[in-house]
Image (cartoon, rainbow, N blue to C red; front, side, top):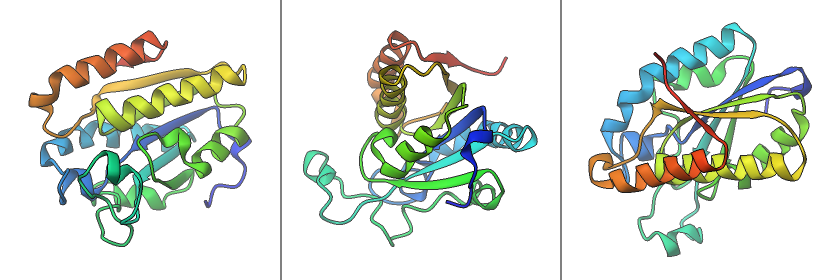
Length: 195
């Protein structure tokens, strides 16, 4: 992590799994997910212009990751290139105020480095969440974050941007996406989109 003083930030943009293994290549990729990249870039630029913290989450597994026993599609193996941020977003990973964090589960809140960021960035009052997959990693991570904040009596607004999230095979998974959105909303997470 190149960002040192996390206490200066009052807001954080979390970009979940916008990586090659879900957008460009591999068994779980769906190039249709790239349709949300322009809106994500708008939000990233806004965050950099206003000195907000930007966090890229990268699904990264080993071949023997337990997740592959529950979900048999082996994906995003470290060193394969699938775990790398997609090329349209990659330049933003090198800017100031940006952190890249690998995760080995369907919830970014379970990644030790991400949890440390949240623990140290005690002045954050707003989390904006974008990325994929809506019904898995976006949902699980957002609800996990809401639970963490409740457990530690920290008040912060969590917003998931509907125009900046997607999932693979989305047309055939509409019921999962709808259910995920309902669950997030039930947990007090705001579902928003640009006018």
